[in-house]
Length: 70
Image 1 (tube, rainbow, N blue to C red):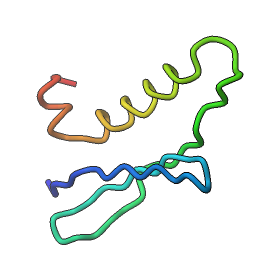
Image 2: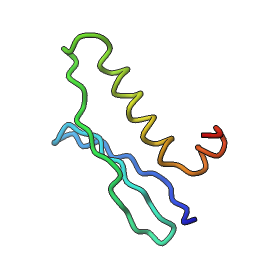
Image 3: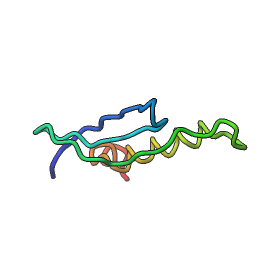
């Protein structure tokens, strides 16, 4: 299994978060990109955004899945 880390970039101009896989050879691969939440949305938009981002990272990480027995 090829190992990689994650790089998270907060893009102010595009108002989005971009997550890449970073491989040991320096290659980057786009995992996901998501706009910042609309703070005027009902409920807890920041909490929903953080949960989705966290879930994406955990589910994409073989090491995290192994530790959490997922």
